[in-house]
Length: 549
Image 1: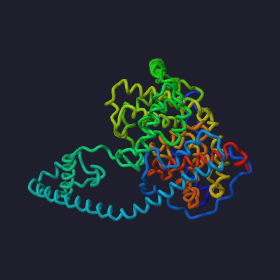
Image 2 (image 1 turned 135 degrees about the horizontal axis):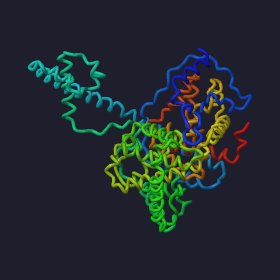
Image 3 (image 1 turned 135 degrees about the vertical axis):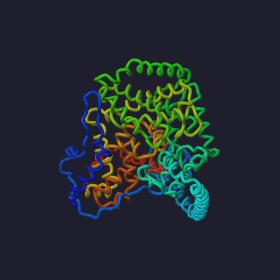
Image 4 (image 1 turned 60 degrees about the horizontal axis):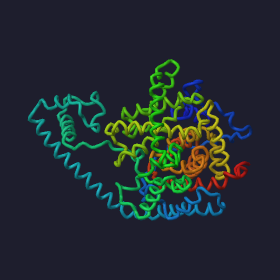
């Protein structure tokens, strides 16, 4: 099949996943953005060479879980040096050397972990096999006991078939279940018995949706170094006037969960450095937000606003669908209010699909201010009403502060995103020409995959736990969301160079780039990504001619 044929079939099957499906509502009612119709954004004369035919490869799947020991903000003894450099204009050789130390340290830790895993994997497999055998023997005994009951009671099969509680492993639906089979009835009866006898368990959260770093199990005791960092944060934010520059330096390599809510509020500019003024400003801003609710929220069904509200109402259930927290009705109502109020207060852009994702990190972090347990299954209705209102208002104002710095990403035609995607293409062409030429060869346009990276700030590419860690640095870095993000995207793309170069057709490349295997990622991987982005920034940010041909 020709290259053009491959591309047409791919876009037809994946229309809902690509930037073309992102629609703008409110105000000017912006049309959907179709990257295939915006080929004129690419400079004339830079048309890639025709694609060479190749055998289509099977779509890349997620990598297997890779266990790495680390904690939420520590990647090694060298991160203090990296942290100290974050706010200084240092010699480029020193910067690169330090970033290389972080990456080299990460490689050594991975090698040691692989050796440890290889010695333990055999024992884990044996234990798992023993558990499976024991479970099968128990189910077989139970099945035999139920079969005896069926033999005694001829009505058992009818009763079991009418029962709505069936094991999904036996039948897909009631319409597909065979009727009149005593053995099948016994199987369903045994399944019902197991479900009723087992204690209630919370839903199993997929690895990609877990909020805590999967590299740690439970809540291990703090190391001396971690406790020392936490004390530094607490002393800094508790002072009469917080030194924001010092807070940025500490926050660059990650913020402890216990102080992240107050640190984010300070770094975003929502709270002042002066401790005496904080409480009064919090009360005033929270009252102001709920004043907006009283003034504007009832207008959501008005003809002028109904398209905005309808799109928000559709998008909210799609926000982090794997995490039960975000499927609670009260949480979805909070998100609807936040997004609607922001949209009508910013008519130049209005609501754009993707902004809904940007609320979630703030909401999760501010929930942690009131709870100590993990948040994935937390029932927000157990919080006091005042706490829930505070979380909602604080999330609104901090999200607004973020969007103030990148609003040209969401105005008509989204010029901010188009400029950043073009800058990403030019940067990658200089730092890894092989990757750049490979995508040119198979006619992959950067806009086709990097649009989402800029529109959603990589939130669709990383687990939420990684996004929160990433935003620690973004808020500590000057122009983190608007400028540093470009270098993170470049480092992120080059991180997958081997997988990219292994793909030999347009479809394989697009499937890979839209489904990068990061589900096992934790804070250590994010720290290494940030170190590489930091190195790129100092190599190219102040020397734009370095990445222009």
